[in-house]
Length: 223
Image (tube, helix red, strand yellow):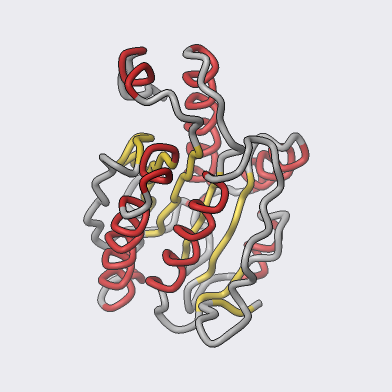
């Protein structure tokens, strides 16, 4: 998988540590209608919130992989300041296993780019959002998630929209998967942007306490 060219001059202009956030977005046919509309609105709100924070806009890098008809890297890693949320549409099946495997490789390659350019970085977050069950083989992806988490190569989060197979998500993720309340995508992305901002203000390697998304009146998830 090729990375978009990112020359040393870009890092020279912005040598801030990078906080990579990869979104794995289920755009299968079952997401059609209100779910995909709310997902698109949530992505835009996510970008706007990060851009409004001067430090996060320089440190947080976002990439998006969609999986439906195919698995596609629709946005390469780029800082929030220049990130353009993709406008996604729903169609196809749910090749979740391939999406996870592709995402892990994309994150690995991005870390290599940081190392080659002497840029400090935080542990990447890989954030899976799905409303179904994998329609492809997923055992290898699950093993890669567990191995990567054990090596602290990345942090993997799974969110199930109504209809998601939470039993399979529990077999893939190390952390307990979260179930989205209704279509609260904007609440989800607000939590994600707040979490990314907190991480970006910390020192790389530090553990950052995160707000529990299942608690409080603005909680967007349940277990």
